[in-house]
Structures are given as C-alpha cells and as structure tokens.
Amino acid sequence: MQFIVIGRDGTDEKALDRRMAAREAHLATAKQMHDTGRWLYAAAILNEDGKMAGSVIVCDFESEAALRSQWLDNEAYVKGNVWETVEVTRAAVAPFWAPKQ
Image (cartoon, rainbow, N blue to C red; front, side):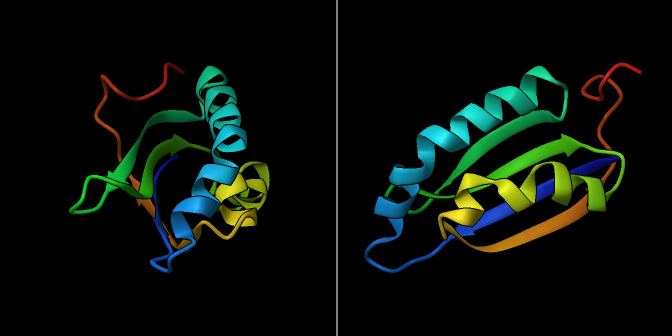
C-alpha cells in the first residue's frame, strides 16, 4: 500500500535550527527506508526563499498503522519537533515507480 507523507516544518525562528539538528538522523533513516524499499521517493519542500520548509515522502507499507509504527513514530523530524504538521494520504503509485512484488 503506498502513501504520500507531507511534513511541514514550523515557521518560528528556530525551525531551521531544529531541522538541521535532526537532519543527520533523518537522512540515515531515509537511506535505510530507501534501501529496504519502504521509501520510493522523497524531497525537501522549499519556501519562497529556497530554504527547506518541509518534506514529501512517497512510501510503501502494509498499512497506515505499519507506516506509523515502523517509521513515522520514530522519525527524527517528528521527535525533534521539526514537522509542525504531518499529513498521511493513501496513494496509488504508477506501475513503473511501484516496488517490485
């Protein structure tokens, strides 16, 4: 089951500092999730000044509950209060992007 996860950073003056402090742990998780086929694609969301302001991840998990327990509940950007809001939406990835079964 594929999902789109959109995490939007806080907008306070310390938001970018929190992101940078959690970034190394976030990227380590991103690599692991990619290598295991959980994350299909990911990108930073940029604000009008070209600074990172959020993230979008296209991922594959058995269910939303699995997505949360196997990744999101322990995501560095969640635990580090980087993402102010997180939206999880079920999606259907095009066949050429979908993981091989």
